[in-house]
Image 1 (cartoon, rainbow, N blue to C red):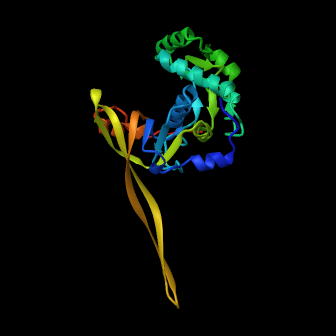
Image 2 (image 1 turned 90 degrees about the vertical axis):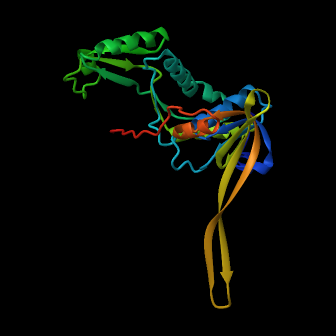
Image 3 (image 1 turned 60 degrees about the vertical axis):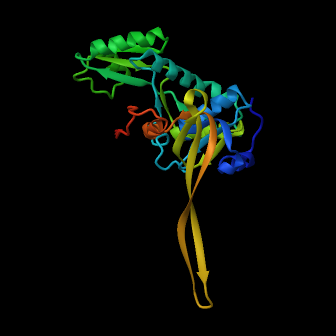
Length: 280
């Protein structure tokens, strides 16, 4: 599906102003890994779609995606989560390599596995989850403490009763690389990225469907004054708003998704920012 697309094409189409188009089949609110993946898969399925991805910070300084731990596991208590992770593992190991590496460098996947530890108190829950995972053909195995000590000699098993080991399709990768892989390939397929923040979502017409979104953007400005003896400069910003038509809106705002949902008339979505700590 992808033709050879070089760096010039990516640079020229990666960031556009709203004046490039006033209406899109799909507007994606949030251009991180999820939003870029949505744009990529939509255009992969139908290259004729007009897709716009709105992202407030193209540097992704505080975005959720690059701050992720970048790991993948199949070990969940919900079968749908297990299946989604298995699909992602297949993408990392196989599907991504079907696309042009000149568009984006392939994502390196370190298939190191996941070991979920359980005490005697949590043994029953861990075993119940294991049954759900195995029903989806997940590559997981229950390990008693003696096998854990043998396989992981550095592990202190005191107080442990059992472990669940994902021996295939689990590990870690660079989350920024994955985000940029989807973004670059989405752009290569025709997606347009717009810098700005969705500030208003409007409904109308038959079924009171979402019809348009207003995008606010702020751009830095610099002004200079000079005289025969000195010169000075000052910096500031200019703001603008543009309304674009939306045949459909996809909310991929990460921990800000609840705010976007409320603009669309869907209050109380239980998505909030949470602090996470990783010990290495």
